[in-house]
Image (cartoon, rainbow, N blue to C red; front, side):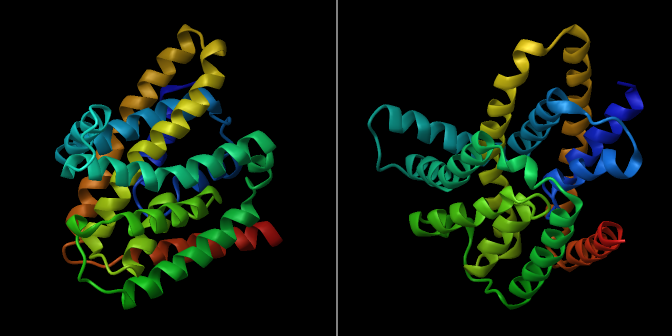
Length: 267
């Protein structure tokens, strides 16, 4: 693959992974709209690794607590605050992991990769995000996250298996509906993405290791680097904007893109 092709894929993935506009939807649409070659699973795994590195670096303080909590759990110390935080992340990840594996094994996930599905999910869940964001409370913060909310957000995250729904958009919507502030809703959503991206990357990775060669590994390393930089910039910008701006700009983008895709799909 050319350097430009790798750059485009990585930037699209890096920017859209954490913004509530659906990275999977954009990656599916990219080859269909531009005529570029489908990037394949090796590059998909690579850009996932890049975005994973970005969110780990940006939220390193929280990630460090989760890692410490995992150590506490392994040592039988289940009542510490770090252990509780690690448990919350694990609980929130279980539903989407189980559902995603079921979709993968059934082969039904391929049936969802259509422009019509992406168009409708882009529109519907964009509108849902708008109304919940405008009417949701602002009284809860990350420190208020509890087991009940983790289970609820885990169920919300299952919806993100629909291409175009957006993992970050769905979990942010769920957190806002529960009364978390815009910044903390995004923070919890991003932290939830770490085990989720790791799990999906590991699932894809097991399928491509046997077929990877030196050139594929080289392309993957380049794509991962581009995706890391793009994701870090997008994440930093979004978290800064949320201090003063709602999620409305992302909703507008979703509605415009969804409308265009519906026109393309039905004409």
